[in-house]
Length: 427
Image 1 (tube, rainbow, N blue to C red):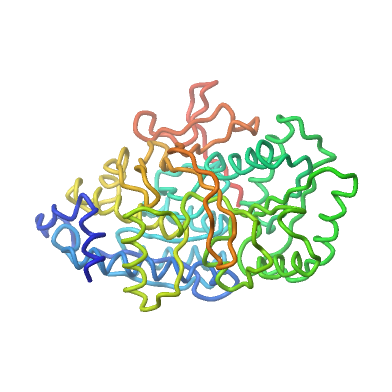
Image 2 (image 1 turned 120 degrees about the horizontal axis):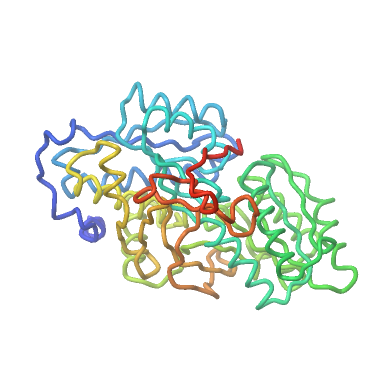
């Protein structure tokens, strides 16, 4: 268990245990809200396992506030309304102190009214479309300015892409992200005629016509690039069709926002070499912190072949920040923990330090990785820490908005009218 102890030592809270048990009802309960069945199980099951590892690791270091942490796992089964029911069950039946979970934005939008009604606390670990800042949610995945915009810049500046195919699963994250990207591309001089947008259902499997349409974009000789917000197991069929059509990364590069090491582990990657993904973490990062994390993960899961990915790191950072905030606040009470979260710092696994902003978004580095034959990524571009932006500058309705829960007590503050307005729902 050496590596687990190394990880535990990295937490500022590790030496602060032994506080009065009366500050929290023992055990402290942590809800895990990830799909273990259905179309999103391909991505979310690993996040459940990650949370169990982190809880086990923290309990080995003494728990929190003198209490053991108990993980309460439920399966919302890739059913978006069921996410809301399971969140309510976690908060009212199991009386959890915090929830770590969700992948898709539609599942998060389903859960959000429940979390806010019951004053729960949710840590959301996946890249998303932004345009949200709830006092009850900490967003530890990337906002568009930490993934989608930098990836688009890489296409424009490094690869000379002139035509863009924006392919997404049909729900709020891809649609909002692509709205932002369409506006951004036009601001960069890309004409509307050179932007192709297509959406498919969850679990979509027949990609032949769509791939053919993408190939046809380049008939005029202009360089075409695909920006993919395809989620879940639909990615398997998409990449297989690319290979069947003989499309290589040299011909038409694909940069994916929801494909990482876990998704690639189920694919034959020999024909995908050179395609890209944009995340804030890759398993191939060469740092002591990452080496320790991967060793601990393999030891816990009992399988040297299991990969690590970006949302796992987001849960790792979010969990440790939550532990440190609970320790600092001396309680698991949501309002106190929330205030202790502002300004929390914790080392990234790729180097540098993540900081939690008053808009409930992390500062994170932006990495672009190139798929290798072994299913890992060669990191070909990396920035310093980029603060997450809850509201984009590239949609007119959002450009005047800001979020500051510390000074303004507002997640949707209109700087033009100097008023706090009601959070809009895209669900």
